[in-house]
Image (cartoon, rainbow, N blue to C red; front, side, top):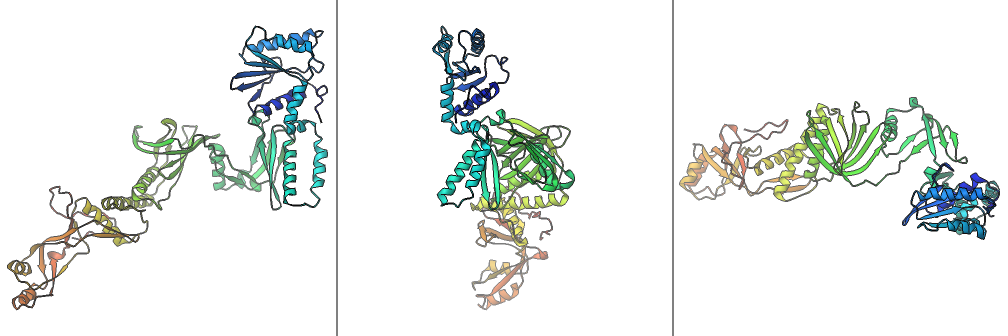
Amino acid sequence: MAIEWDRIGQLAFDRYVEALLHRMYNGNAIALNGRGGDQGIDVRVSTATGLRIFQLKYHPDGFPGSHRGRRTAIKKSFLRALQHDPVEWTLVVPCTLTASERAFVERLAVGRTVTVSVMDRPALDNGFATHSSLEATFTRDQAREAARDFMCEQVLLADGEDLIRRVRALGSRADNVDPDWTWDFARRGDTVVQTLRAQHALAHEVSPVRLRLKTRPEAMDAGLTSAYTRSLGYGIAEEVELPPEAVASLAVDGPEWLSKTVSDVRVIWQPVLDAAQADAAAEIEFLDAEGMSNGRYAGRLIAQRSGELGASVEADIRGARLQMLVPFDPSVEGKMRYSFDLNDREPAEAVKVLRLHQRILRGGSFRITVDGTCIGSGKLPARGTDEDNAEAEKLLSYLSDLEVVQRHCEAYFPAPLVYSGAERIDLRIARLLIEGRCVAYRSARTVTVTLNGRDSPSLRTVLGSEPQCLRFSPPGFEVTLGGRTLDIGCVHLFHTRVTADNGREAIAALKVGQAADMEVVFRPQGGEHFRLYLEGALDDSRPLVPVPLGLPGYSDPH
């Protein structure tokens, strides 16, 4: 059914033509309000070659020479349009032009560089024929055809292809309801899900759809209220579900066929993720009381948005997820949600994540930049308890020790987060040895040696009653964590005052030639432990005095 151009009237003509131009130019056509006060532009289209202007004149019976007023108005509109330097000016009319009328329009371009063209009834009919779904929107009896289609759905389906054809036909019918919006739909069991979709890029400007949600705060718990505030107040893209008891009403304002107000409804919104800025360089900087930087952590931007209350920034900082809420009101403290997982992280990376965690626990002023530009700042309240801080410091100490030992051994693996007390002590000892320190070794209160039977004056001196300075060199020092073994290399056990528990018996055995395979136990005096140091460790000329391990709850041996 063709559009009856001579009967639809000015308002319908404008609407039909604007919709057609939107469809023809893939949403790049912009209709301007204010006929007569529009500066010579009814619809403008930005093309690769320049600006194109369409002037709409509803003259069903044309503009013959006898209607000089119409021709004068057309010429004035043309001259006003030239102020915008268009590359083409097109007159749109609902009639078929006579030779005289077409010649009048073509003469407007004489002596000018602008191209002048006409879109009259044949061109309009051809345009709507090309975009048949749009033509159907304005010509079909929607109620009659919908009823007919509904009855069609009651008959037995022939096969799967028949179902596909009918669904496509129903989708085409949905596309014809409105030139700007349509429904996509899906069946899930007994539930039909409808999704509103724009039919062109400017649908939200030409025919805006607005939602007005009224909630019942008393029916929302603290978690739901916080999620609601994050989403609407700061633009955080997270799914929020309001149960029916929390929704007073939901009003949809838009085209007549879509507008309605409902209650007793569950509302779920899932904001669309905008990846336009994703992966930009993001940085959080911590400031001291004087506003000077005292810590910076760089990462990548996930999203940046804003809402009614402030802006939000989500970033990945070395694998930790930060969600920062920066209020527009500077007197209101900012908020930060922070999540991280140390599983499967090597110690060096886990240390950086944990240090950031400690910064956030302490609170204080911060500044956020994206690609070097400050996009927000605020002040975080201190949030960590003494127990939280102590636990973080304990874990950081462990990870730091493991990072040093892994680097020394050139053996890298994710940090085991479960370990025994003995493993923790050995790990700290290994780090101190690598750093050139000397420690009193808890597992070496005695050293047992086996004699080979050969006698000598020096051996008898060692076995005598006077304390001696002795050093023993086992092949290596191993640390075991998470089923993995790290060997830091050759170490030396020594003490400056060592005696043999069974020295007299050993000397007697040497005298009669019976000392072979005899075990002798050497022990430092005063109940002390042997000292331990790493072969080849940096010599800083300091005496080999044992340093404390510095582990909370651990009493150092003497």
